[in-house]
Length: 129
Image 1 (cartoon, rainbow, N blue to C red):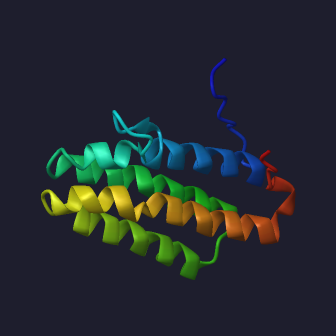
Image 2: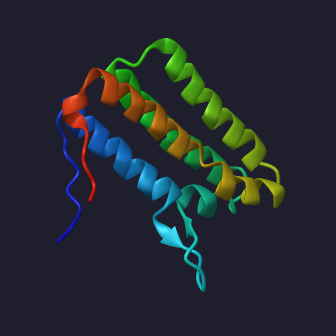
């Protein structure tokens, strides 16, 4: 049974797509021999320049979806700032790779979106249990 990604423009569908992208970028893999999750963002960080550009573009998708939800500009700029910090420090060899694993800008951006949705579209909340 595969993961179904909704294609609608309603807040619930957008929330699911953002959650899926965050999962891929931040928690889709596990470091072998540990239980520590990493994602495509950290893996792409090992590819000089191109990896960081691809990572930033994928992260920008979350901001684009947040814009479609009607998040205020200041929240969108905060999300862009998170990506800029991640991309800038992440571009530094070795140190940036470690930073990518710890900073998790996409998780921070997901939190911003969820907080907005919980306040303005509470019907999109999912109770996990």
